[in-house]
Image (cartoon, rainbow, N blue to C red; front, side, top):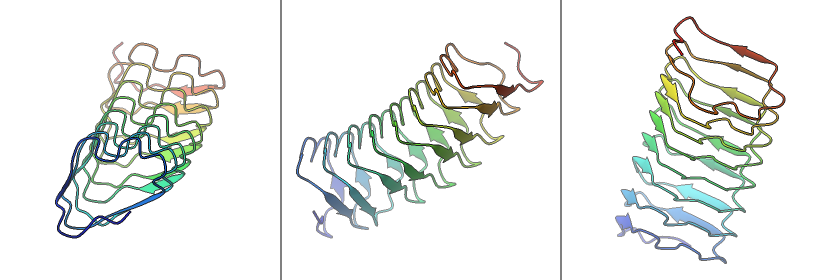
Length: 193
């Protein structure tokens, strides 16, 4: 589907559950895409952003199981809760250096992601963010990160090593629960508890 150039906003759940939608092109006229707009579009495989949106809204692509890769626009500063949750075949994602916050469960159960690089701009990573990313083996967390939430890497069973950024002062509940392949973790002096 191609959105006409006069459209400025895609409203909440506008295309949610459109199971035969395979591609979407969002024009530069669109400044806002609201929550769950493409949730459960099970055959959506291609998304092209031309728009200067600032937020990947809550549950925007949740359960888009045919989505394999996506490039987030450089205008985005926030990835909200559950934005890509249960995108089971998402294996490649590019997060721009404009993003400062990654919300709860953003990539939870994205079971095809093997590696991900968090840019230096990110400060906070929410609860359950990478929960049960079963194939995640490598993740680079920059020194800018001050906190990551509870269950953040729970059940990342292929994660082998992890370096906690020096600004983090607390490891939250179940952060690395059932990370059965984790063999090395670097803990900074800043850690209080």
